[in-house]
Amino acid sequence: MSLNAFTARIGRIEISATMAINNEATTLRAQGVDLVDFGAGEPHFATPEHIKQAAVDAIHANFTKYTAVAGTKDLREAVAARHKADFNSNYSFEEAILTVGGKSALFNTFQVLIDHGDEVIIPAPYWVSFKDQVEYCGGKCRFVATSATDGFRLTVAMIEKALTSKTKIILVNSPNNPSGAVVAPEDLAAICKLAAARGIYVLIDECYVYLDYTGRPFSLGSLTEYKDNLLLMGSLSKTYSMTGWRLGFALAPKSVVGQLQKLQSQSTSNPTSIVQKAGLVALTSSQQCVADMRAEYIELRNRIVEGLRAIPNVKCTMPEGAFYAFPDVSAVAAKAGIDTAELTTRLLREGHVVGVPGEAFGLPGHIRFSYATSAKEIDRGLERVKSFFAKL
Image 1 (cartoon, rainbow, N blue to C red):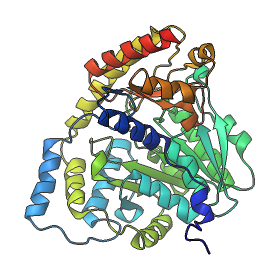
Image 2 (image 1 turned 135 degrees about the vertical axis):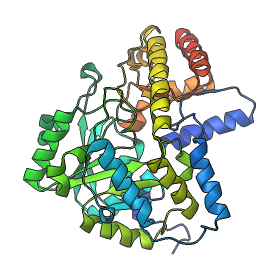
Image 3 (image 1 turned 45 degrees about the vertical axis):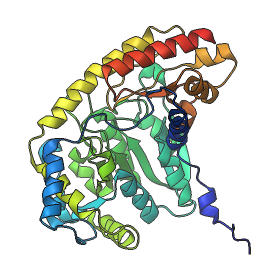
């Protein structure tokens, strides 16, 4: 047997497209190239001081041992309580589990629910990891295409057409990465009603739920009548600018959480103890920092969209949430005789602006630009994009 006899399942997935872009950007920076980074999928804000201090206090208090696999009881209660206060949901601590980042919550949930041949409906554009996580389990993705012409709206009619006897999960991501689209509450309710009637789970990634600019943020957890069919995935990463802390969670039926605990006990075990203390303070303290960050994101969003719309042959819908713009650059790519993957690569290498091609999200013709950066960097980046596109 060859020493390189890797498993079939690892062959089903590819390295994250965002990681590949970031790796090349890192190489260029090491060579002294000045880049404007619109590729990063994380807040530019520092973690708020009171959250950082909680971790320092935990270290000094020697809170550095193992905790319960699913997280401490007080943190699980805090997750449920925060969600109830903000969205009028109804979860107990036994229906909550803390994970090593939101990505771990998603991965583990697919692992305990998806078997070979099971199907997952995924609206496109989609976050890069959804497809690979499902396929790693042996599942099959059935993609539902949304369009920029109607603001990437997802409707129950679109979902219903994709259903088969093998559908196990309907996946929704709202606000959406990469488009910034927000699924309307009435559309979410209709999707949940359909799923309940068919005995199908609705899994929603609410990583950006607090970065909803349409008004008061809405969570699927508000629809308590469909609770048995709901799988809510969340994270403190974007809400509190805690990406590197790696603290996510799932809210789900007790039976599902039990299986997630079992899997987690044989993989990562508990999230880092001191991070849990920081997370507890984040969830139970004033939420003013969340409101302040959201307000600045709205200003940055307006700035980058206005700038993109001023570039010839570029169209851009107004994102309703998250911190990404997803402009249609298909006319620019067509003029240059290349696809958007090549266009994005050349923009990085020649224009010195980092973005992620739409191909990574299942929707060629677009580039994802993160506006989680300073207004000065947005202006620098827009000028470079405009200049580079004009040369093609």
